[in-house]
Length: 240
Image 1 (tube, one colour):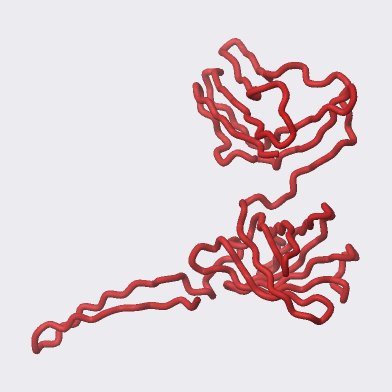
Image 2 (cartoon, rainbow, N blue to C red):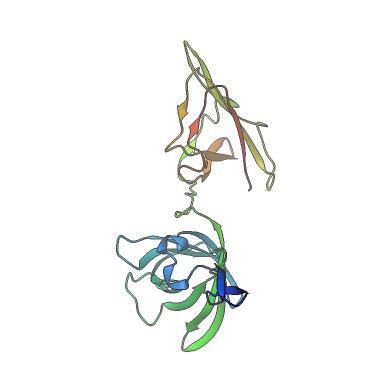
């Protein structure tokens, strides 16, 4: 949709005094910043579902990122954005260079909300439709690994940091969760001082035989507010 400026005039008496009132209904497409594209997008191209991540590249108008399909493979993405138009390629053959085996996309960001984009993609010379919906501002896939067994298992349901002034605790609602069940966490700051949470992650482990193995590691700085004030409590969940 184009950016449109609409107005009306009120003429008063013969002197033709004009009062002009106008309002912009949408930001001009050429003015949209590249940062509006950054984040995680749920994507569908002709019915093929996947996750697209776009982030800064260090170059004007250039975007880079990653794409993960339902097969779990992660491919590099390189593109550019100018105003509300985006073009990018997914490196499907993981050659680290753009070639005929890659898939090209052209689309337009929704100027009203910046929460979606849509366009066309070309595969082997045939055009198809695609769209993407903004899911979050995260610009990295979470780390999932089963390579680091921990035979000792979790020491306690509650992790607590204590000092002479008090304690800081993190605990889950239960010691064990069923497959697909939402996991809940509870954090409490009773240290008599504020706590800086920058850089923190959380790790989910699952039991494999007698060993506990890392299953899911969150994105860094997953909480929107990275300072937790003294005496405050915070709850959050992880959806399996």
